Amino acid sequence: MKYSQHSTDFFQLVYQVCREIPYGRVTSYGTIAKYLGSARSSRMVGWAMNNAHSQNPPVPAHRVVNRNGQLTGKIHFANPMEMEVLLKKEGIEVKNDQILNFKEVFWNPNVELNLEA
DNA sequence: CGATTGACACCAA
DNA sequence: ATTGGTGCCAATC
Figure (cartoon, helix red, strand yellow):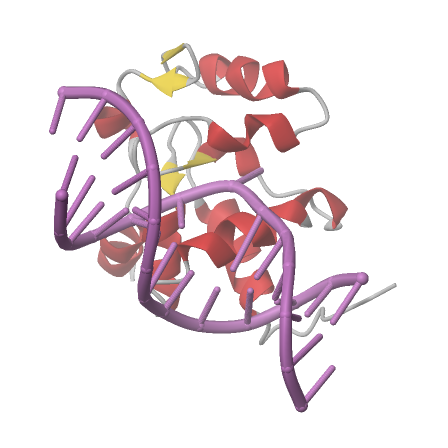
């Protein structure tokens, strides 16, 4: 059932941004929300991820963590441990559900996408 | 339409 | 520094 798959949907925007995340990079919910114009909708972003797995091209939700760089959403993955594995495969150091070099791999769409534009 | 939810973020104690 | 509570926005039931 296609609930709201219009391109204007907030969710779609979230998914789109998530797919924009470069390999080996991660970002936070709040950052995405801010990029979309709703800085206070960080929770919405996380919720959007709830349907991320239902999207046709599954969004790399494993590259999205909270502002602490903590893998809070790993539990929502089919295999929670897969999130860590995926991140590690991308060169991201994950220890105890915490991205060690979070600051290094952090990707800021507000900045990078603007520079690219 | 009203109430609840949700993978967060921020402020206060 | 750590813990707890509140706020926010949109979607879902």
